[in-house]
Amino acid sequence: MSLTNKERMKIPRQPMPTQDPVLRLKNFNEVALGYTEELAVTEANRCLQCKKPSCVEGCPVGVLIPQFIKALREGDMARAVAAMKEKNSLPAVCGRVCPQEVQCEAKCVLSKKGQPVAIGRLERFVGDYELAHRVCPLEPKPPTGKKVAIAGTGPAGLSCAVDVAREGHSVTMFESLHKPGGVLTYGIPQFRLPKEIVSSEISYAVNCLGIKILTDHIVGKTVTVGELLEEYDAVFLGTGAGLPVFLNIPGINASGVLSANEFLTRVNLMKGYLFPEYDTPVKIGRRVAVIGGGNVAMDAARCALRLQAIRDIEGREVRIVYRRSREELPARAEEIHHAEEEGVIFDYLTAPLEILTDERGNVRAMKCIRMELGEPDSSGRRKPVAIKGSEFEMEVDMVIVAIGTNPNPLVFNEAKGLEKTPHGTVVVKDWETGRTTMYRVWAGGDLVTGAATVVSAMGAGKRSAEDINRFLSGEVTSW
Image 1 (cartoon, helix red, strand yellow):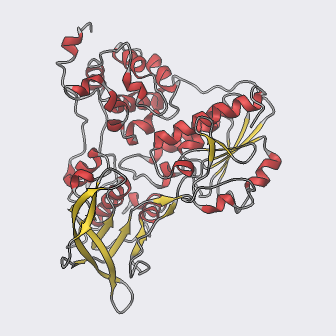
Image 2 (spheres, rainbow, N blue to C red):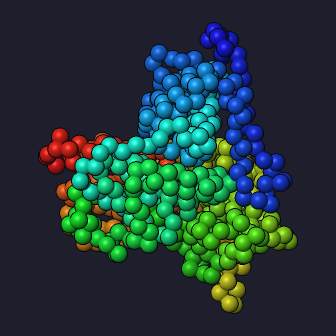
Image 3 (spheres, helix red, strand yellow):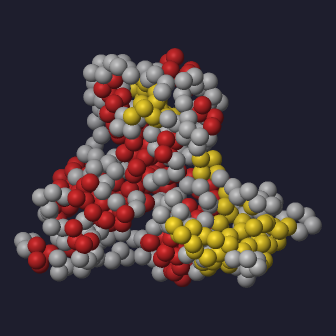
């Protein structure tokens, strides 16, 4: 279709089909159903093919956005996949979970006067096509004899592993849990990122590139970084930030209080999303409060809501308790919208003070206080200030805390020379390479930045892989 830019700008942004909110409460199937070919081509025709594509600047891995969109609208899917996968090893994943609205789409020129091209939705369409047809096979170069150990099988580790293995190096990955994928497998709900997609991407990389994955191996306990260096020529640390942060309030250790990390891991790895076909041991309360306002809080609240609905719990409710207003919510707009559609109750300008328990030590209520917004703090958001005398009790029997995570300190065991920040993250000498203060050890993702996005972790993994490949080839000799 030959269109002028003026004609392209008149094409409205194509909405993503979704499951009906009432129906999806009773299942863990994907909420967003993806574009049809017709919708994808129509949306791709909105792209102006800018000579200086600012959208690419907004992508942490530098996806060749104009090229893959142009190929898509011309019907050349093999070329679209090839353009996409030149920079992004996991497009079907990123198309579902990346916050494109504040990255590539925020830089789209169409956003200045209207709605940007739906780059994320097109990325998902291309990624799903590759999953179904595998038109862009992964092919390794001849073996080099070099060995690389990668701690963590999440987005940073996977991205690094693929790029290192393609150069012909032998790659072994170490995963602390019994299934690979990291946060992609245990942290993100089935209705946002189906496990089948994650497992398919991982098994494809393993089979094509000969990557070895050792599960139930905790780096820092089962094997130390020092021990890995005795066997491997290079080590990449991508163990993420899986240590939950809790509020320092009375009652936080009560039965019925758990972190969002633990709750989501239970739902994902204990197959809570298959209930009632699978008799999951995941428990759920009648009145659940989720503390926090990020994507993890939305995920936890929406999982809780589904478990309640599937089990037909009477008088059920799930609340998001957030100390700022709706405008300050850090979660993606799409996730907030879906949570509201599904019936999650939002208690804004509310902060917990104490978890109240019954005589058996079980949660019976949460004492809270109303807040108002004051002057902006260091984050740029207006600081919440407690309103004196506004305390009240919220009836709850389960509390899920989703206020952040830190790296697990185990990785530093027997890792002499590996420096960490006061926040517990790994110190890197150079952000562009991911080199740490320990010789032949690289790091990236949440272990370095703290909790961030999937695609930013992938970007760190790719940058480290590039430097590891240069180092192993002898191109780089200094540290």
